[in-house]
Image (cartoon, rainbow over all chains, first blue to last red; front, side, top):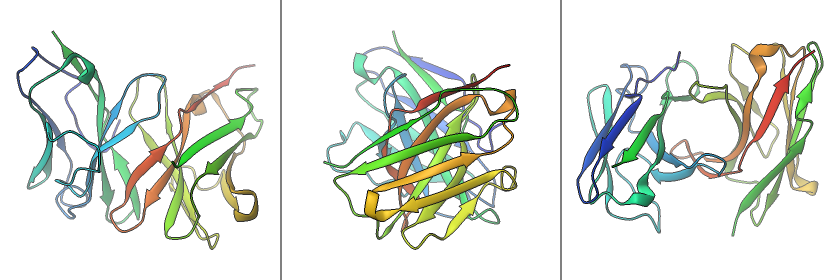
Length: 111
Length: 118
């Protein structure tokens, strides 16, 4: 069982926006602004899309955005495109562990 | 362009030692952590451990008794050894670079599938 809770799947039509939640505790997501999000196409290397809750690495589309409220972080993808279809997982630094914990991953289907 | 490439045995028998090495291309080792992360079939990702360029390590407590991560900066590589493997250690193993200021992984390799079977 993953430390962080994500929905198993979400779906949306091209052009729509979707949001993926990532729920942790006051010892991880709620304690630090150290949440990151990754896009993973099976068989390929995971790709960083958000770090420090809201920051986008260079080269990542501004269609991807992150936020946090309390113990829940969220990833929003606007203007859905077919190439966004992938697995998405969240990650947070965890107090008391001194390492990162992960969500179980969410499969995004673009209808 | 920084990239990582790992190699090692993908099929093990129970009680054997898993051994994987990750080569680092296009980056220095300082100012980062270098991590191993795994994903069992149908499950989420699990942090295995990480090392810095001084050789200081941090391991997942659930694996700590069986894990050793080492680094050879001259060879531009870091390695994972996991002893006494069982079927529960079957997973895709990833190596990754961790940006230490914000604890995120900015570079990953494609992963290696490790199977444990008698």
